[in-house]
Each structure stands twice: as structure tokens, then as C-alpha cells.
Image (cartoon, rainbow, N blue to C red; front, side, top):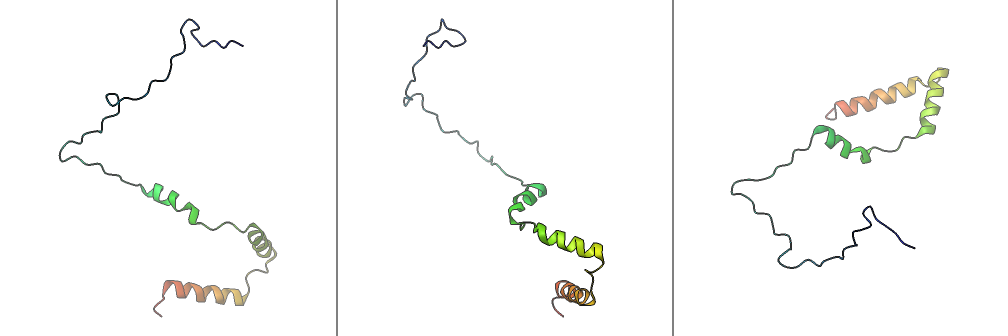
Length: 93
């Protein structure tokens, strides 16, 4: 089987080892110059995506159904919600 490249008249070239003369030279840094990195608010927010807990779809659907049926808002649930909000907003009380 013959495989021909784009220019079949040109022979394949071998791989040449890197010699000390051809090795990459370390970049020199000018005096007083430094690099800085600024991370945007959007990038910080995107980095926190993994911290978000997974959505519990079955719970969301159950609550939607209860709200639609008018059975979700009970006096007990409202009292619990108010107590939790007060604790979160005013922890010193």
C-alpha cells in the first residue's frame, strides 16, 4: 500500500533530536516588569458552580403540585419559614 501526501515528490523527513544548541532558552524578564492576573466576578461565579447542590426534581414537582392544589401553605409551614428567616436575618436575637 502506498500513501502519498499532498506533495508526493517530497520525501518524508525524519525526526531530529533536540541538541543543546537548539534547546529552548529561558525567557528573560525585564527589570521591574511583572505579570498580574485579574479574575472577573463572572469567572469567580462560574468557579462556584460545582458548589451548587443538585436539583431534587421529585421534590420540586411535589411542591409545585401542592402549591397548585392549595395545600402547600399551611400555618405551620409559614411559622417555620418566618422563624428560619428571622434566625438568618437576625442571628444575634
